Length: 201
Image (cartoon, rainbow, N blue to C red):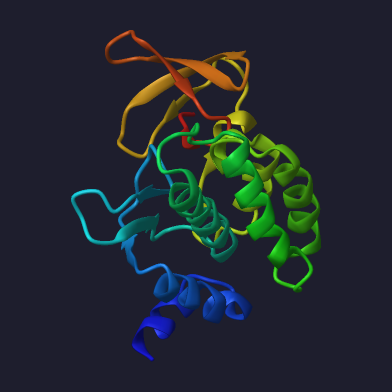
């Protein structure tokens, strides 16, 4: 079946049937999206559209793709139960996400190191896997297309270039993000520690 063949390019083999069945069961308009810097995936309810809609970035590794899909499916299930009467990432969503993810933890799907971090993460899940530094860091380990360095690996004060060619100087860490000075416009921006960068030597 063509749809399953497509899914098999993005997901661990053991979960393809389950994800496909969920897409059919809930009538999901599912789209594999181009890379987006602000999000890994999203969910939109059937408002002014006949179907639930889920999109996932195409460039995620198979484990990140699965986790993101489950994240968005949890939003769908919360919408079916509560519509918009609860917080997007409140206890209802956390319970749904934890319940769905628990179904995958003992199936030999995730490597042991990722399974351990994920098991801890879902106890009180954050709004995005990128907000969970430990989970984000271990997921990056399984990227096939990683190149260069991550911002957290650079010394404070070092100059680096981002993927769009802009130059920054790394500054101090504020809670979970680094303050970095754009050398073109002298404005300060906050960067995720695992932002891919190229140091300027």
